[in-house]
Each structure stands twice: as structure tokens, then as C-alpha cells.
Length: 258
Length: 295
Image (cartoon, rainbow over all chains, first blue to last red):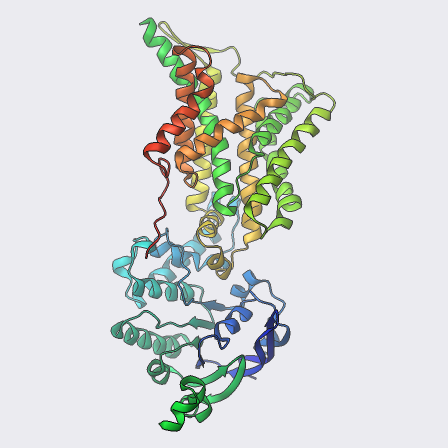
């Protein structure tokens, strides 16, 4: 059974068909990229998975079960974490606090058990802090641990956002343009972390990405979409050299001249 | 010496009133931070809290402390109900519409209070364990009433701050006020956060009412003190909870001093003069952060 599947997903906003019967399948433990020109509907797919938009047709299946009726804040419970194109962090909190907030659903407590600080609450707290420290170690964030996010450079903020997603201990990680705004070196680091996450943590990744070099370097399989329609899905090299994909990206004439 | 004693008493009275302003202002700030709405019913929540405490103590003969706790819980429920019944259906509507609704709530609470038998438009009082008890030190006489107000208020304010700083839900609430979208992705239920915010704000208003009652008595127009808490909140920057407390203290102390040392009438405008003065020098308020747009 496929780990994650989109079946005939469609959504329209007013008269605009943003996604039109798109299908794709993501296998457990692979890094899967969604590519396409601006406005093709890539981020819309993420927003639908997160239940910010209601699909007008089709369904997402996680390990065979539909997730289309979950509440947006329950998606985290299903093991799905996400980062954003434009960074959505808690800016006036420290890096550590941001990571610990990623643990919100992993902890079970209420005001009374917390006031008494009973054993299960204590253990959860310890576990959360350990996990946060592990991530700080893994992503080299030690130097920024207690700094407010708002004071950090863009590249570091992107790393913190990745860290916060990892703190949720996801089984499926959605990355929206993870390399946008990063320099060469930072992109290299990210590629390295991605392969570690895949090999060591067994996290399945779906990412939306424009940087084709990065896609080639990190990705197992690719889905190309344009105008809300799937063009082709397959092995990375196969998709990137597909004439239809090149046409969608470069335009008709350029392909003829190439 | 005479001057010193009078001055000390005036300051203590000002701090006591200031703590109450601060608590009500804290209610304003909490709701504003999480929902970007100014709750104009905050003053009426204070009034309702005072009436509930009055009934519990004089009609049902509850001991003071039990009445205090019961009122806090009752007002928490009132806050949660208001959020659930009136405000939740308005999520996503423009802020000004919701602000107008809170004005409606304030009139509604006032009318209901005036219609309830035994409450109505008269003025009432109740005894606390501190009524008519004084501390003397030489010539200096301080009423226990005022000391108890300061102690109870500071204790409860500290509890609120500890909750927001250290508890899981408090952290989630701070996070939600900074970035709602990201909070949802962390699995935080924003509706629960809003509901809890109203619960806490209403409870703070209610406590303000109980504490204020021995000073001003219980009557239908107590809610006007909510209007004094607005400059307290603005003074502090409107988004800063510690700012709300400091703002409340500044206004309380100024008012108290103006009442004693300035001619009649200055007391009521002192708060507003301070507010205008501070805003000319620091438009973002004392603790506010000036939002600068990066280009």
C-alpha cells in the first residue's frame, strides 16, 4: 500500500480551477518533489493536505486512510509537519521555545497536572527538552539556541523552521521551497540534512522546489504540474528531461530552439 | 511628618486602585493580543463580578474567600459562554464589527443587572475580613482593606504571568498571538485559545470587581472604571501584559495624588493628561514595540 496518495484531487476558487484531478503517490521513506511554474498549484496542494482549503473533489490517503475530514489543528496528530515558503515562526520567542512548541501535541497535560508537576508531566517536559536539544545539535543551532528568532538571519530562520517541524516527530514532512533565499553553502547543508533525515529518521518528504539542481541532487521521484494539471510523475531524471516539462518551464519556442 | 503620612497613605491608596486598573487592563491586553479586538465590555464584567460576590456574601452568607473563588470561577464561565455564543460566530469578521458587538454586550450586561431582583440600580456594600481594620505605625494609619487589595491583586497577577510563561497552554496562547497560522500547524486549537483568553479576561475583570467593591461600593455604573483601564492599557503599549500593570499603577497613583493635592475635578482627568503626555513622547506606549516595516 502506498504511504501517501492523492486521488483525483480538485479545487476551484470562484471560476479558477486551481487543481484539476491531480493524482500522485508517495512511497514510504522517499523524497518526493513537486515542480511546476509559478501559479501551477504546488503550494495549493500543501494547503489542501493541511486542510486550510476544502477539496472540491478527490481525496488524500495517508496509509490508506482519508485525511480529508480532520480539523486543521488535528493534522499535526497524524504525523504531518510543514515548513513555509515565507517562514512562519513565532518571531518574538527564542529558538528553543519555537522547537518546544513543536512538541505541543506530544504533551498531554492541563493546568492542574502542571501546577502539581506530577510525574507524567515531568517526564513529558524532560522528553521535550531532550528532543529539542537533539534537534539543535543535528541542525547546528547551538549558537542561536536562546536568541529571539526575529534577530536571526534569514537562512538560520529557515533552519529553525525545519527544526520546529522535526520536533513534531513527523512521519510525513512537507517542505515549501526549502532553498529559496538560501545561499549555496546553506543549500548544501540542507541537502545533507535531508539525506540524514531520510536515512536515519526514515521521514518521508514531499517538497515544492524551484531549484532544479537541488531537486536533482536530493529527490527520488518528481511530479510536474502546470495550470493545476499533472504533466508527468516518475523518476527524477526522467521527469526533468521530459519534453512537456521543459515546455511548461521554458515556453514553446525555447524548446524548439534548444 | 503630617505631610509624609498623608503622602504615604495617598500612594498606598493609589497603588491599590492601580492594581485593579492593571488587572482590568490586563484583560483588555490579553483579548487584544490574541484576537485583535478591544473588549469594551471589560468594565461591565468587573461590575458583574462585584454583584455576584455581593450576592454570595450578603444573601448566601458565603465566607469571603469562598465567595472570591466562586466569583472567579463564575466569571470564567461567563467569559467562556460569551466567547462561545456571541464571538465565535463572528470569527473572520472585521475587527470593528466585533468591537461594536462588545459594546452591545456591555449594554446587555448592564440591563440584565438592572432587571435582576435584589440587584437593580441601587448601591450596595459587603463586609470583607479587612473592613474597618487598620495598621498603625506612629501617626501613620493604613487600612487593611487597601493592603489586602494590593496583596490579592499581585498574587493573582503573578499567577497569570506564571501560567503564560511556563504552562503548556500558556505557551501555546503566546504562540497563537504571534502567529495564528503557525500555531494551527503545531496542532494548537485556536478556538480553544480564544475561549481560554475570554475566560481569563472575564475572571480578571470579576476579581477587579470584588476588590474594588469595598472602595467604591457595588453599583450598576462600576463598569465606568473599565474606561480608566483603557488609558492604563494604552500607556503600557496595549500589547504588553507587564505594560498593562505598570500603566495601571501609574494611573492609579496619579489619580490618587491629584485627588488629594490638586483642586476638585483634576482627579478625573489626571489619567487622560498622563496618557496624552506619554503618547506625545512615546507614541508606542511605555512597553510597546514600534512596528517598523522592513523595505
